[in-house]
Length: 392
Ligand code: SAH
Ligand code: TYD
Image (cartoon, rainbow, N blue to C red; front, side, top):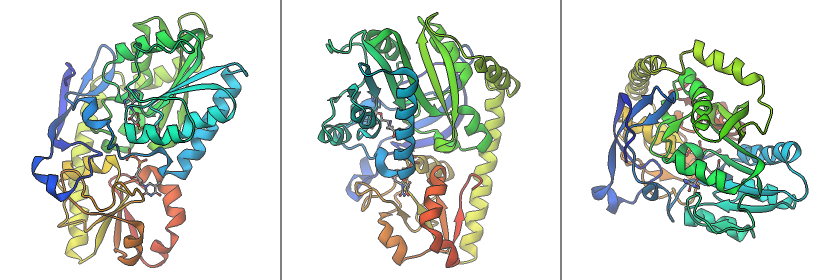
């Protein structure tokens, strides 16, 4: 699939980021050219080409919300905050991309009438097992859910709106389900944070868009909706929560124009900032490889810590294979025993990490560093060193 706009850089051939694979499938692994573009009209950072959604979101999906204790806690707070601000005891709630049901379950436990949309069958089944009301499909306006049609008080989402290529169809779905004064709230990795940290690994097949306040403001304004509030989040290395309502139904927070001014100053609304980012990515790649090669020259053993989707971009863009990284340890049973997409580094359990302690651990889940550093204190006490392409 393709987005037509100004292409400004390519990360080269990329596999499906979450397609941790078996040896016998190496020969027919799928790759696409991961180039990125900027649509100046919408101030929208996006992938220029990407796989079909069903190639990424299906019964073999390998990301589980409950893989981070910090994120479970974050979603409990998210549900508490939204319930307090927007809901009453008769409210109806929809979640888009509910995965294993972590967030929607918090709303369900509070007694709201809840519905989740989740196209990846394996994770949707986990949510159903919790007794939740789930539609195993991509969200959109084409569902006969009489209970929720034009009656939903809150539609919420996290880390999924940037996965949806057809934004017009998404907004049609919001219009179809949302009540007259209902609210649509979602939080996604923030373009400004990615530029600041040079965390280019936020770019992979699933992340079709990297939103800013400027882009969200412009996109919803094209429809009968408007941005009414924003709230920065620390999750996933810097995210932004966006609150959307129908036009002229809610008071617009004054903070929005302040943030828009700031984004303009940083040129986040034009392709100029992207050109600086491109240079920063190239420098980051050079420095990462120099440091890894130096570790190798010094006979250091290097492993990867956490087989994140993000790691697929770092490893393939920098061309790092198992000549440099011996293994990647991870907590996800569905990834252990398989190999990293494209670069084919073995994925092992945390037990293996404990028994085969390396000198250097490349932290691919740098966004969860507080949680991970806390449980891996011994690694540093015993002389181990954390490493990453972003500042830790
Ligand atoms: N919200 C969770 C999961 C994020 S991963 C969290 O923040 O942890 C994104 C999830 O959205 C995946 O489970 C994927 O299957 C689902 N998804 C992808 N496209 C979707 C769409 N168009 N509609 C609904 N869900 C979608
Ligand atoms: P995350 O950064 O949440 O997502 P993504 O894959 O989208 O980049 O990382 C999730 C992965 O990190 C998942 O495979 C589990 C792993 N992980 C650990 O192995 N240990 C941990 O303590 C945490 C928090 C995650």
